[in-house]
Amino acid sequence: MTIDPVTLAILKGRLEQIADEMDATLFRSAFNPIIAEAHDASHGIYDARTGDTLVQGKSGLPIFVGVMAFAVKAVIDKAAKQGGVHEGDVWIFNDPYDGGTHLSDFRLVKPVFRDGAVFCYLASVGHWHDVGGNVPGNYNPAATECFQEGMLIPPVKLYDRGEFRQDIVDILSSNSRLPLSLYGDLNGQINALQLGEKRMNALLDEYGDAKVAECMVELTARAAQMMRAQISNLPSGTVSAEDFLDNDGINDEPLKIALDLIIDGDRMVMDFSRSSPACAGPVNISRATTIAACYVALKHIFGDVPANAGVLEPVEFRIDEDSLLSVKAPKPVGGYTETILRLIDVVFQAVAQIAPEPAMACAYGTINALSLAGHRANGQRWVMFSFFGGGHGAHGAGDGLNHGNAPISTATIPPLEILEAAYPVRFTQWALRPNSGGAGEFRGGLGAIYEIELLEKQADVFLFGERGRFPPPGVVGGGAGALNTFHYEQADGEHVPPMASKIVGVHIDRGQKLRLETPGGGGYGRALERNPESVARDLRLGYITPEHTEADYGVVIGPNGSVDEAATRDLRARETAQ
Image (cartoon, rainbow, N blue to C red; front, side, top):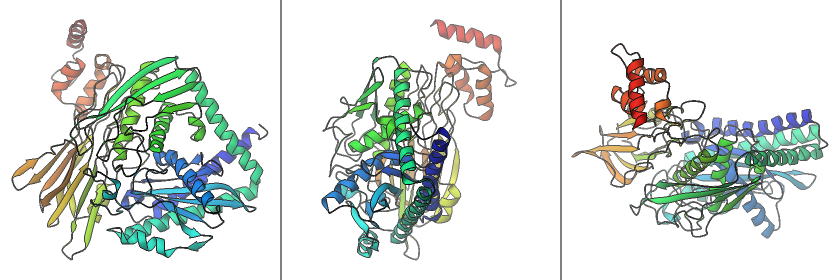
């Protein structure tokens, strides 16, 4: 290395700041609350030749950063067939099979030119509010092909040598139920890329192209070196883990996600060959999405490794072509979030068998994509799409996070005040869910209870969730979190979905309510080893109810709310002896 450590650290920070500023620009300008409030978007800097991730923003979704490397490569390959990339070009697309995730996520890719050649690519991805298809908000659990999920746009030029193509925007707008929201989000992404290009050019002018390029190469090499070192610390051999999706929304049969994790010196093999084949419903994902989800899981476990393509350099993937983890068009993929969450879960479960110290239990495992749609009294169309939180898994250093967002992202749960202001709904409950965290030496985080009342005359309801039949597992002897439940009112009373976590086209009327009770995270370690004072504190805070202190933890609480130490010792001794 010829670059000195101080300069390397400065340039690393400056490059990350460029990505962070692009994130902030979009979050502040987007029309859609899923981007503006929940931060369901991301930006990064990518290699000019391979498309590999060089730098990611700290505020966007990590799953997007991982999969965008494939998206940038798709643009590089397509441009090569059309005469190359030109200064002023910007590409746009949402193809989930060619570097994408699902149709709601639109990607913009912009080359940064220096002296007539591409120095790097900047990329922006954001979840648009509505992109057509059968279901408002696009999470259609009954889809059997991608055409029922929304419009599919291959990589096309939004700007051609600097000339804006209004015809492309016209096509996009005409396929959305909410064209104004689409227009605002699109312009926010354009502005983010323009700012990123300005900041990148300023950095290159200050330090020189060669110095910055050397920094990028070195950061990737260091990530690969650190990842090899982390893998080398694991015992060689094979461990296996498997978990299940409730169903695919079409056939009410569980789907297996299986991982055989092979450690061989400083190399890792992630073999998903035993997973279920491609299914009829929309929980399939592309190979690129599978690899990106594993990138996120590994970054959770090995947090000190820099976030770039070097993380995956010592990792080999084995994914069958007919697997639900490697599908091609037109297989539906709209519910990709549920499948990648299960992928992260099996990685956590496998690593916990060989390295319990950095391992963590499974989080709640579903975004519970909920859509309500209808018309206001003035005839205006409204679509409320949102996702909801749950408990995170416990770990060797403490309890899981209560009511967090899914571990695929650093997004936030949209505030109820924003949702109530934007849509004709009222939240009559927004609370932690008692007893939902898995028992353990360290308790899983609590899920939540959301109850929503409709204020408009009528609405259609769509839910795309998971963990309704297979709770989030604990690790190292920890217990599972609670199952996901959904209830909805109609004139004849309260109902639950026949397929547990997915339902389409439910009609509700003014005053009727929906209630989501989301899972908690899994526990870590044996519950009988939990500090009794922590159990007493959980009881005081309402995290658990009295019947669970003895049944789950073997802790006897006296009438004054304090631990009965003698009775607790006796109870735990009896339970240990059984």
